[in-house]
Length: 153
Image (cartoon, rainbow, N blue to C red; front, side, top):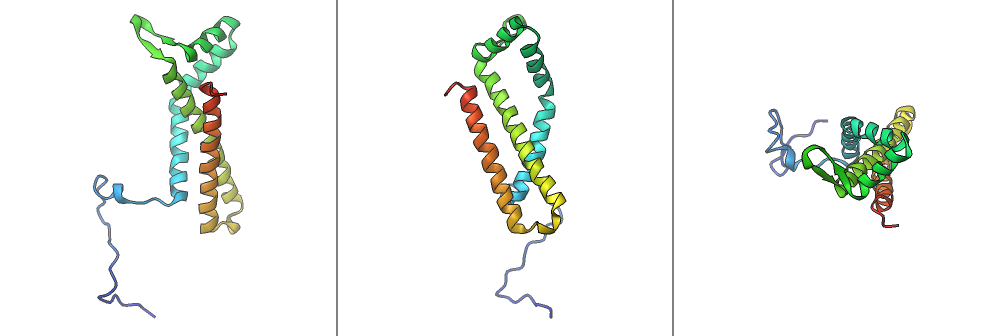
């Protein structure tokens, strides 16, 4: 049985040519799509900050002197050539972004693996609840580790 569009029913809009500036800001992503997009963004953040990760790892294990410089970088800042200084709080924010990216990417990756291996049990409700769980756990752990990073406990 086909349903006819009656004058009382509003016809759904058809988008053939989507304008990114006009149409996308009003688009409301479902929670599962938001988590999936953030999973990709967190992977990109980790990839782009890979030189920073390698520098942190190298300077933290090379020697006691390099570890002291590494620790001082987060307390005072990093002195670059010609008097440029990167403040310590900015270094901590970059490290906090890495913490969030890792935690979110890890938890969302486990979520995707679970859905891939148990695809018969996946439903719209499970997608929404697992996305909410992923966001809550990754943001909660980021706040806890961020409080430790900024010396709140």
